Length: 273
Image (cartoon, rainbow, N blue to C red; front, side, top):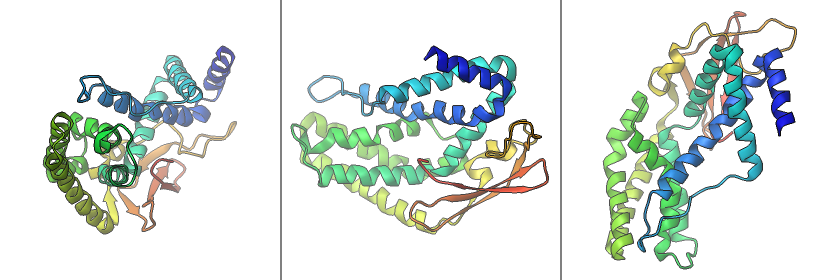
């Protein structure tokens, strides 16, 4: 591992633009899992024990993430601005690729399948599996909105989602089936409304979904995928203010980036990729 770390640092010193995006994305991968682990570990079971972590990472993945974070930290000594810009761009592109309504719609569907379709040995009505799926999203909801789009989501759905969670906790304590039915009445209504909302969305305004990207202009970091050794860096000048949502099942986004070479570079963003 030390040899790999030293190799990454050497390449990072000579060609930081070549490594900066992969490292930034890898460092981001641990965040949802950490949120899930914190949320689930902090949630007591009816028997008083702490629930097990909802997700875990294979050793290799953990090592890759650890190397990425450590390498970025050491690269700050000679290209701090580049590291900051890479983290900003990668984190915001990940945010834009799958927004809160899509995250909740996907997770509620998964929770629905776990609750209604899968057997739950030793687990009353699959409540722990259901909450494990939703734990990272509740953590983000409680952390608060950071964009206008997320604030709209909170205004529209937070009350129902919090009420549903309270019913789930009451069921864990009492075993009263009426509490679980009340929770799923709320969950299903949110799921239904989100499904209708997602079908209607065709264009996203960057000012609503990622104001930080809209303000990111004249950067040092290269347009993704354009860096070539021994060639001039094509840096990001700005991001186009509107994003088109494609109509396929994954709802990918078409995002355009203006480079300082005078060209418009188009990208397709897909959630979880």
